[in-house]
Image (tube, rainbow, N blue to C red; front, side, top):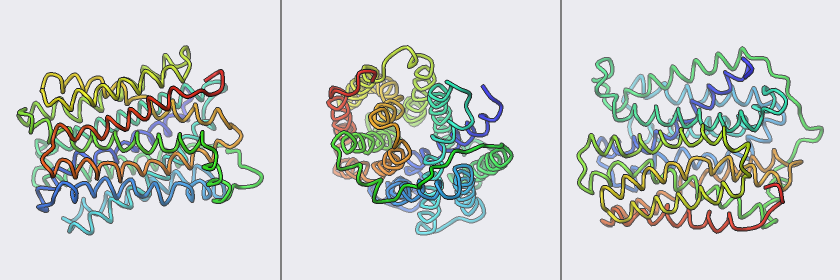
Length: 382
């Protein structure tokens, strides 16, 4: 592993901070006396940014370079974390900070995947990208754990749920400095793509279905992050147990699954692995629908392992259909991360209606779609 890949791995770690907005919603709900739907606005404002800024981010990267876009994203994220670190914001200002975090994370995603190719050795790109997703999962796990553990840290007790923001700010600042110091020789397209040329890819069913798959996958993952903790408590678990077997376990399994995936995907073809992953995710969400605590824990385990490699698998399978347009496809798939804003609103509505365990039908249906998508044919080597 080259030394200059380490700052990029660091950038992937801080991408995981956005995933903490789901678990943090429960504390914000109490602080501002919000409904479940309104509390889900935190995730909404993170992920709606992907819908608005992914394709423009790809065009900007083609003009200023991926490293500069990566630095811009880290700078925006640091600014978004600094404001709640210094003051107790009103709900509107908090949402503005979260939206800026969403824009910054969008730029990190758009630039992070292709820039890994530039800093990787020959033949190491796929392996490093799989491991990078594992590092992102590590960041998600740490950020999610911090949401529930921050009040136990004496230095931040008086800040309550806001205590995580100074830590996130320091991480963003460190990542900014390390990326700024690394030298990257970038290859730029002779003719930068346009918004029209990018969106025209959606006219082809194979790409439209894949983008919808990413939309539903991210939505399902945010549903798990947002609602596992409160619904496990509603099933009868105490707060400590629900914290242990809820989002923290889920994101830990995402991390383990992605790191293991980085090891074994070199020997297993993407499409069969995608099929197994989608099936595990659907079964996991189905077990959570039972409302039985033992089956729910099994559902979290299967779900975490099933969710782990959907993004790199679906990404690689889709790009393999048209590798010469990988940049545009990356922008479209990052745009589909906006599913994390919209899909959880449906689940939040079911939870507000009192359908706690049954509300996991939303991520279950998302993964049934992904399983059906995995059955479709593709290129022979996929």
